[in-house]
Image (tube, rainbow, N blue to C red):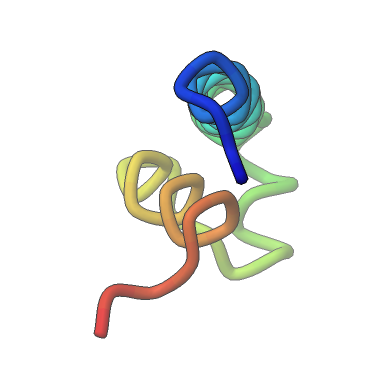
Length: 56
């Protein structure tokens, strides 16, 4: 059985991964982002899907 504390730890870890991913994408040099076909303005969406998965 998963305890509430374990659930909070997982949520905190996932949120930290989301923020780090979002910040890395948002601060990526524009030429690199364009080479990877990434629009830095989509950093929130890309990071959310990478960490939490796509919404159903």
